[in-house]
Image (cartoon, rainbow, N blue to C red; front, side):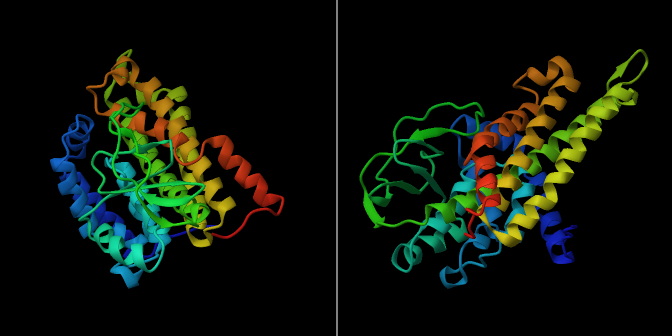
Length: 322
């Protein structure tokens, strides 16, 4: 089955691509990794101004959604440009916040970009808890607004700064829709991973055309062409799964899209690293911004094993629509 974007969706992707290209996101990512958030916050507001976060927020709370296909379109571009920040977690918060009280109080600011959210199970590490203004944590007692965060810790991806959320805080609901919110998080992560993989592939193709060996471009070698073709096929196979899952929003479909896209991005990262050679290992080279993100997204909001288990559960009749 083919999933083709309509002209409006393609124009939305093109506008985001143009905006993020002009923003010089690699420098923004490096500043974010150092805990310097000014330019990242400014970019966040521009992304929100383009309507990205509003796609996850119902119209009743000053949003445009829920519009899952357009959200997937947006997150492909966010991944393509390695945009930092709790992007997925802000989308997840829109699905977690109960109506009408907390949703009415918190969602308009998330849709407009005035606020950003992070979310994590109690006791786990949350992404960018130091910069998020809405910190959500859940356990057996329900969903709470965490009162603060612990020390910032480094992660595999320097732009993904981790903190533990402090216990306690306002109880928002005793019965949060965790499965529903996780489905949204996995869809956004899958689309983001696809964008990361596409960026890695584009950069690697450009590099092997320039790098020479034995007097000819490396990209002319048959073995190199095969590796790049395999990476391209894996990414293109993931694309319809993502948009198909965005239409159905069933747990098995989204889990399949997530594992397929993240594995394709990870495979492309390994290919990119091999074909770049020693320069690919240097943190100063921009390729590293996408290499580390591909690895981190692979385990974010569901490891490959967990997602495969969700798919198998769906095949056995245990899957459900979110």
